[in-house]
Length: 413
Image (tube, rainbow, N blue to C red; front, side, top):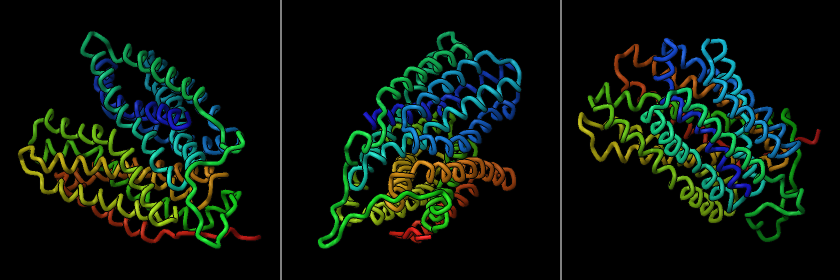
């Protein structure tokens, strides 16, 4: 039930992201706005998302998952529904920027951390992989909902009303399915790695944010995730344009190859979760196992970028392989970095620790990665240099992953 509730939350979160790209064109045409004016709402949503994530983590640690999903259900439904009624830029910034930002910010930290609070050691990767598969599923299913609506007489306004109903129903279901921490039911988390002979299991530690952030472990994890995130969003926002403008592909062909990432992601996320847990079981040390995966993740992203550079003016098998490899990267890093942080700091106060980390990473990474990609295209006239930058960013992420410590000590004073 915990994993299914997280699946619903991730589905709803990425539903917002996936459908915007399809709706912004009809919105701009109907309202007479520029693409920049329409995109402003999405940009603000991501900013509010990052800020809200920190508070979501605090609520989660104190009151559990249900109230967070309940807030997301209300604001998520209102975000789409009220946006369908807007006619002014100010109203749009409020409905899609603020309300949708609050909703989506409530979903990411809560879904990852709630799974982590129930599943640790040899089970977290698998269970989070299942939950995270809701992301590519949303990109596929809700894209079909939007396409069907727009192709059958619907407008962007009626489509958003439909989406508001879908989001509300799914998140209300998540509220009913969600559970508090295992301790509230006199249970223990699943999957603890057996301790070595002669050793005793460490007790869960209560960390303050100040104490946690006085250690390199969290900053190393943040910087590792941030550099990967910059490269990831650069690729997400520039890839189709790279194939169309630099390589001369037809737009439909480029989009079909790009969709491969989402389709493969449905399967790669749970499968890579199983692989991660197998590695944890093999090394008998969760932090070490998660660290190994965090080295592999950006290395896989770097490999995919190198393969993109070899794409020709024709759609070839290499492009599909590169897309598949990006799906593997996507399955490893976002959940893996939470797993590592949980292995280092424990479960009790992970919500607020990772909430602040999300504020930092998501407040910087998506914007900066997308901006740098566009800036390099403007300066050089080619998207190729954006891919070079992504390669460098993934390389830095690998080095930061290698530097991550396997244990830390809490200060006595």
